[in-house]
Image 1 (cartoon, helix red, strand yellow):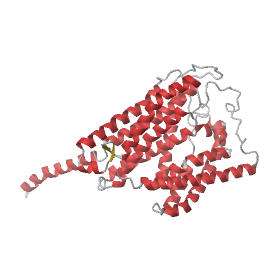
Image 2: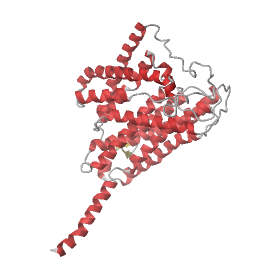
Image 3: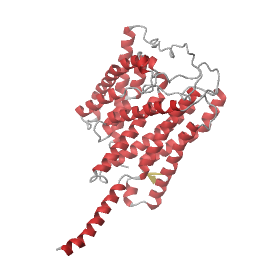
Image 4: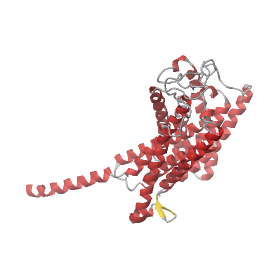
Amino acid sequence: MSTTLERLLPIRRRLATARSAERAVAIPWYLYAVAIASTLVNVGIIWDISWHMTIGRDSFWTPAHLCTYLSALIVGVTCGYVALRTTFAGTAQERERSVSLWGFRAPLGAWICVWGSFAMLTSAPFDNWWHDAYGLDVQIISPPHTLLALGMISIVIGALVWTLAWQNRGTELANDPEARHRLHQLFAFAAGLLISMFAIYVTEYSYRGYQHGSQFYRVSAMAFPVVLVALSRASNMRWSATWAALCYMGVRIAMGWILPLFPATAKLGPIFNPMTHMAAMEFPLLLIGPAIAIDLLSRRLGKDASPGRDWITAPLFGLAFVVAFLVVQWPFADFLHSPLARNWFFFSDRNFTYNMRPQSLYMTYKYFIRSADPSAGAFAIGMLVAVVYASISARVGLAWGRWMSKVQR
């Protein structure tokens, strides 16, 4: 009997080792690679905005720009390798779950990432020319910045779609709860980075001084329901939109804590506010509130509703977003204007630029812009319009989420 057990023990050890190895590679390295690239995209763009706020645009070859374009390089190398390997050395299963483009085969998420990489690299010389022609320090929204933003968002969406394809197939991780948990973590993180990209692009309409006006809520209603509703529907993860919103807030808060630790001074004039350290972007929007509301509504209504029913439920998602966002963001804007927020945690005293006058309403915390709402009636009408915008955005999000939930390539 003991001899039989001694013979079986090595076999059991080999089987256990094989199972452990299978689990270790259950989630492929390239999903982590594009997740790192997506992180560098966000870090680079937030760093670059801080650079413009603190120093100005002194050169194209700033560390922030290099960080951003490093993400495009990582994506290009990673997805290029995956495409070449799948095309020329892939298994039948790998080729079956890939998409053909110009004779090459790769997962759909990889092709979306590749497009984003090309868009980013194309925008670089265009952006340099734009600054030379129209000024060194311009607004966030410009044609080259728009192309760059689309490229960066594409990289993050590609990483998200690639992760969802693994989730949707399910067979690879059916017997590995730990790997499924890591995949859910990757999804939440990539989704949070996507929300961050949307938030960055509407920065100029989201300053805390705008957050008592209907324009802020109208712009937010166009930008955020589409992604929050899509995430809530697409993922098998419980509270997917909520976790994504938490990841978005975590990334933005971490950057708000880290950037002011580095000394910096302005190199462009006029300098009305001498800077001694890197500026931080404002504290992130409290999207956790509408994200919870959307997740609750999604769980109540179900994620498998018909397209016809989506037309009926979209206004519910739109209304839930606007009401929940108004309830949490309006008083929080008051808090950000108060002395209680002028500290390292909320960093509302570290959002100023080198060309901002110290006596300005922004630096003295004395303003809320309500020019678009001259009366309570105008504000009410503006918020009704916000609900309409949010409903349209939610309907697009429902369709997008339905498509993502079916992606398996």
